[in-house]
Image (cartoon, rainbow, N blue to C red; front, side):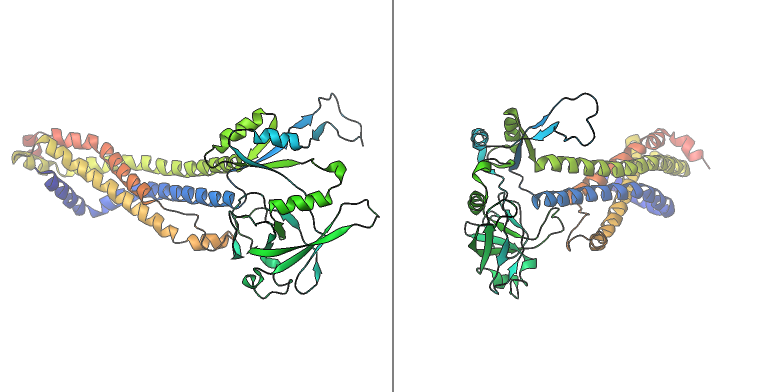
Length: 421
């Protein structure tokens, strides 16, 4: 018998036992449904985590700090005594030079602490504002304007969209290219009048809070060059060139993890977004693996259903098998017939489970709304390749499960089979 004829005959045999075929396929579909959803949730979770990381830091940026000094103590300290067992040191210009000497380091910018007394817009009203420096190339969700490499140029600033109305603009687009004045005070002794000056900048872009931004804060963000200028003006000479940390940008052709290890070897504490990403990905993989495990158990249970169905089919069609052998069908053709029937059952079960999972994927907007996520966020992302591989794997599992029944059918004696009532 030709392979095509065997496949067609296997399909006809299954249609003659529709209910039994459907029930067996549904048993397999439970596992296929669970595994497909688990893979979709894993893919969606990783993509969401990746976006989360990108919007909260630069993958090529490293945060470098002085090593924490911890003294060894015995017994409890006195009540009210200042805890000096742990101290965080500062970095200086010599540390920056040492960090810059590490191969793969493109730049090392100190973490400057700056502040503004108030800001003044076109309406000449004074408003308090948070002031920060945009050092890294973390992605920014812009409401208007544009940035080069996600950083403002010297002389320009990035402002929050919540500032637009109070500054007297009707839209974020209207604010682009307009001036904004920041009043900068020098750090002084409490009780003494503060010396200060105005610095005027141009609004280059307006950003807005994204659901994937974990530490977003309304305010005004200046360039690294302007930040250093403000820091030098504000900081007393005694505290100059003492930095809490340094932001390192790795070269495009360098491996951030290797650069991180090299800086650690020089005696610094180094943190990167990849550290957080690996932890989050591990969590997603554990959840995905757990869900897929339940699906695998369901498929394992369905294997016994396939074996049972195939054995019943062999018993019911004993005379038919005998007639086929009497007409010249070979043993391997009989075996193939039942294995192809099992493959059909696996195919139907995988297809039904995958289609049901795809229907659940239509609930992505509802899921995002329930979790208060940004519109358009998909936590279930289906990869067609995964679905095809899963269906083929289920067909293979079904064939293996139907191997013993097909072997029994192939070994039936044609004369004895024809005598069976």
